[in-house]
Image (cartoon, rainbow, N blue to C red):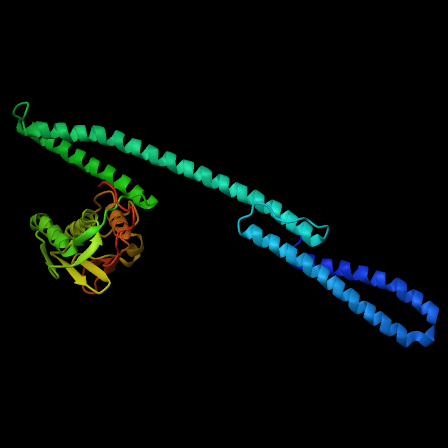
Length: 352
């Protein structure tokens, strides 16, 4: 297929060749009639004729280029075919070819989008069914295990109680893992439900720290928080609580003895920093920390490696950021930054 830069010179050459051919006939006849003495008159006549023919050729080329440009603009604006009558020139033929190819590519693109939407709908339906099918037996396992632990059907021996506790822990862990996997999938596809309200983020931080104090004491870790008593923002309080809980419990797990949670308020943002004095993060691990199913190599490997990936997703659905850095002295700091003035979008939200 010829490009536009090749087509226009070809059109000009064809038109000029035709003009020269047309002009040569009367000029030759006049030369024979008047002889050499009329050379000056002949030259003037030839110049005038050439000027007129050049204008005719230029106008024809301009009209052809303008028509082609209009048809190309129409195609770029969304027309499925090149509008306007086709000509016999090379430029018109090239535009016709481009128009046909454009229409074919546009049809293929629309077909691909339709298939993609259908595939996405099927995937969402399959995930919803799978989530229900997994939840139902897991809830039954956990529920009946709790009944056994409560000795509703009779007392348990010490060995039986240990077995029941093991089943309960394993069932609870598996249920949490299933929920994490499906939540991470929803975050990846942008379908995770978020309901923002005007909430006191400082109160959320205090509650997270208070609830984690029991775990910190059992591990011999000092846990404290610093910040103002009021810090409001439009957030999903449940999602932010979950994100901060993940960070605080992760810090306690890997702390060397102390964890500090700091809330800072700026004109446009809220910042929550979780700092520990544990073994820290190796430089090579910083880039992969928030990838799903990744776990740190510097500490004992526990869990499925979804905590930080889910935390990142929970922060990002609020338009915020999550970063990690190694402290200069010892340990690491995870920092959540949330926009303080982001308001909920129309139609935003969903059942949690």
